[in-house]
Length: 80
Image 1 (cartoon, rainbow, N blue to C red):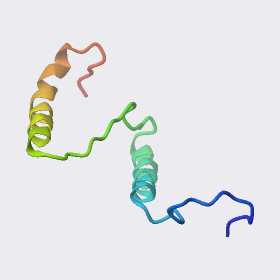
Image 2: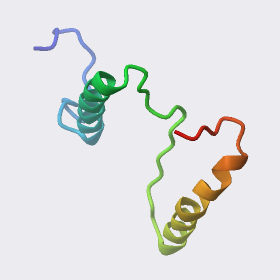
Image 3: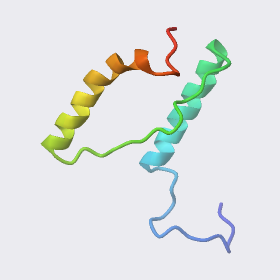
């Protein structure tokens, strides 16, 4: 499966980790979405964050609730 001289990952094969699952999900969604809309693209510069405590959860929740109200003032905002 792997060439003999291939560098080995210290954590073992990486085909069943979270990143590979998300990658497979995004590939499937992209293929199907492009059948409906050929210009489909994922949001660029996506940043994920692990919520580690209640304060972080509260701040992220507040951002999710309040952020859409700020979109109309953005130069890239388009009503679809």
